[in-house]
Length: 261
Figure (cartoon, rainbow, N blue to C red):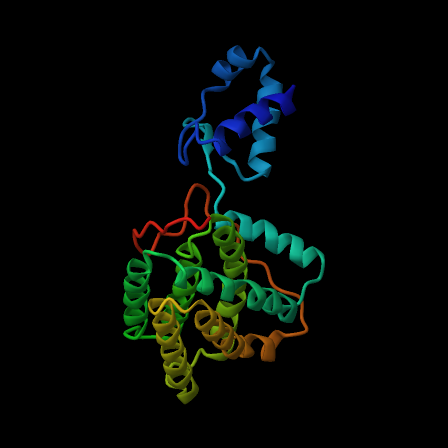
């Protein structure tokens, strides 16, 4: 019975009937609706909590709160699976190199790419003013993640965005360990290269040149990934913390991409 209750609540969440942050009915109301015992309702909620679809609040203000699936939540579960299969940083980097350039290519083919170009340009301009290396690393990661979100294909957005989120944690770890000296000359050199590369990529997207955008992204990723691969290449990836319950990464803007067909 618990599985049946969980299946129906799951259907409502992924189907959009229940939105992120919505509170589930009280246990007593769910008992009445599904005609099941309280233990069955509680077991159903535990199933959904394990899947990351529900956050259970304890105490006086108890109950279940809906957590819609996101790339961030998917990234955590993907990282668990990758680590369980002893996936290395180099292996992860190869997969990213195979997928993310396709997002750049798709973005260049969008009929409304001017809006995409404008937002990506703003993100690069913001990254150029970051006061620290760690802030720049976060800004550069936001650029890549936003590009996947704006590529115009929902499936690719989620696949690439999930992979990008897993990679970003590995990259941030290296930034903390290797680039923790803010006045190190390699820091500014790396930042200038990344910014120039991002601008060339944006120019290719603006021109509607999908092949060039693909090449620019591939070249950029290959160069920027070397810091991680050179440090941790043959070692198994690390795990990020579980995504904060009920939250999503703030969107960098409000451009609504045209879906590719």
